[in-house]
Length: 192
Image 1 (spheres, rainbow, N blue to C red):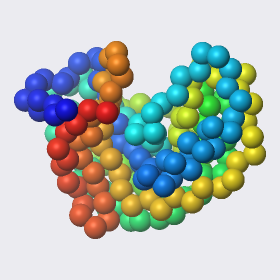
Image 2 (cartoon, helix red, strand yellow):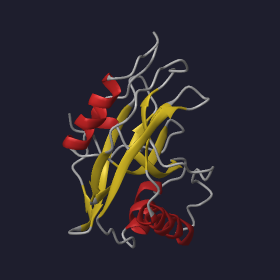
Image 3 (cartoon, rainbow, N blue to C red):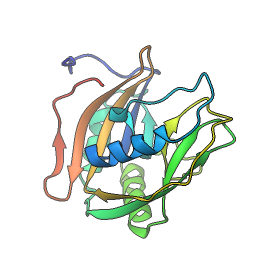
Image 4 (cartoon, rainbow, N blue to C red):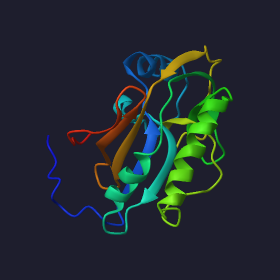
């Protein structure tokens, strides 16, 4: 499905997400781990195509927010690095997550992104609450039982910029990528 890029997307139901999306092998390993859990009835599981580690996101209220964000992110240089996903559990808010081992390059990357947003005067739109790097694997999972996790290596080489449509059904629209090899590239928008 293609998406009409001429539409005005600035609504309170949209957010612009900057994040890391695992490749197929990492997503498959995450899914294998997720299947080992015991899940109570009523859990909600994000599809594999939407699994991500959020680096930041903006409420899309202002005109040209997408353009301003992409202009700011064009200044961010992506350097490939490796993460080790090695912890999983359920937080007190009923969200089950997988977390990476602490990694300096991940925190440096997030700092470069926040610095670019600050320089572009986008920080007032950004969600800046305490950041805990994680991938959400389930929601409404308060009583889930988590098995021991085998570490999952993840070679990170690309940042994605996505518009999250908080509609029914929830959708992601991939807008751009930033890689060490190509820098910022716009993507043909499609909804997932």
